[in-house]
Image (cartoon, rainbow, N blue to C red; front, side, top):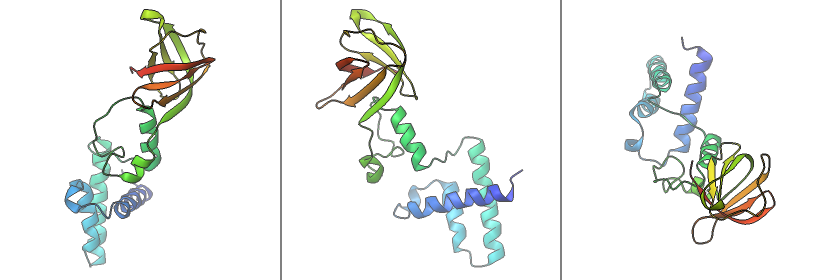
Length: 178
């Protein structure tokens, strides 16, 4: 059962999204969201409330069925951090060309710690990083054996690729594999 505080929270979030996306064309919005926004145009208070109740209920059902996903800016930042190192197509949902402000906040480096490491072909290393930073491989052998808990810094290279450090190893070339 949907409680009144939950309805108000969802409606507030939806209205906040509406004001943030006011420059976006109405046709670009999901139908469920557009119907909720359209409730504002109803002049009769009882009909407007009934419209809001119905549309918020529909949004709640869609979110529970995972037909609709609502994320805030902080969740988008965390998702972008966890995807650092992957070449992703521009879906327009993680701050692509559709959102210049988020794009300006693009993640260009990560600082985390090493969870585990193992040697792979050519003396390179496979590194599992903490905090959802994924699995990376070194593209050059390391002088010192990396240990769990070592600090890891990875940043985008000038031309392409990724550079950084693992523990006391500096000038390490990386690639994201998982």
